[in-house]
Image 1 (cartoon, helix red, strand yellow):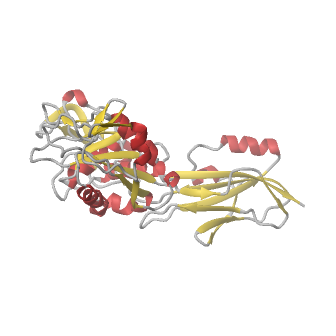
Image 2 (spheres, helix red, strand yellow):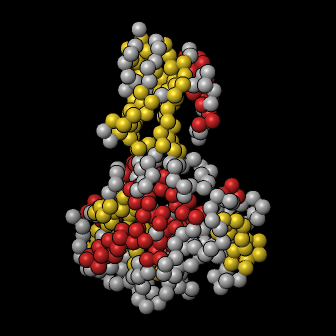
Image 3 (cartoon, one colour):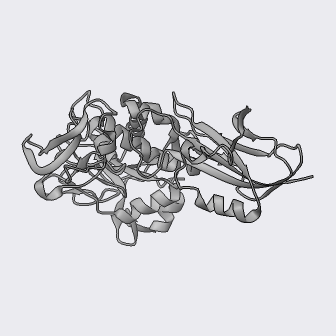
Length: 390
């Protein structure tokens, strides 16, 4: 059960509630994880964790957390990828409501610097709650008190206001490895959507694949061109502007999709990759389940080859990390197996002769939003050694 009390103050090594000290361990033990969106296990989905900062009324926080889930449908790539996402929240009460003048007494001790940029004071609590929930990205939310503040975000977590959803999702984009398409001269960063290299930006292979993708001068927050800094999208997107109606452009959508696929692999579950022994004429017993998005099912193909133990070991070791159909173009060596539906799963079928075989299953996401995938996040594979006995 959650500690539901009004007097709450974060201190080193624990918490002070009223005049009683509670350890961090006690808070973690009592913290209640509530799931708002569930599409699969923690191991097979991207898990967002929403945490409360400066809320002393649980209903207000829950309403804001629910509004984040509803807002997923306002952004094209999030609406498409919703089946890859789980969303949870943990209500952490604060002694008082957060304001830009707050100097403590809130759950995560968030303050504002002289430029009204949010500063996180209690990283340990955030990190411990993230671990407890087995989350991938913790998102601390708070409400403004009339003054505009700038969020904090990175791959370790998001700290943002929810009074305007576009500003929250701009910071969420940073948590998913996207960069601002504006910057100060000293803040130039190379990413999927920004670069210091005009000739060879990361997105160069995507030029010509998506509308408006090229190499354009990046600007600062006042619209002035920054010398030696480039962006990949002609049209301003959510990583530049947070006005109503602005969405992520094609490169940023590509980056977000790759990020979700890093956690929600194309193959959700499959028969364990260990040696299989079957009788002649029997089926392989290889099954797998995939993780489709709203419109796009995962494409699955399978091939097999025959040989002695040494030959098959060499073949398996020679397979690239990221497979493509070209890796199986040698028709004398590789034969196509059948991929057939079996309930909510897929079954790999092939009639194998007596002897030793290598069966390779390749899965990839066909979503056209994928213009580039340098890390192979949108592809998956399994390999099985199969011995067929007479």
